[in-house]
Image (tube, rainbow, N blue to C red; front, side, top):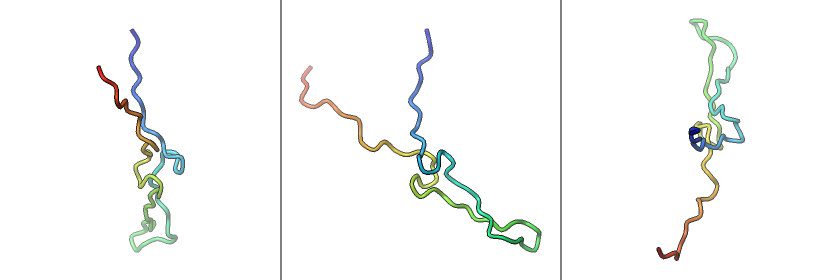
Length: 64
């Protein structure tokens, strides 16, 4: 019997799954390290995945 495939999270279309990047500010500090800041994707807030847009439909009014 084959293994069941679990549903994967939806990858954010804005960042393509790479939610956080390091951006250099230019120049180096006194120790010689690059000055960088981290920037997070504004759509997924740094998670890399987007929630589904609408909830799954539920059955209402069905009696067993």
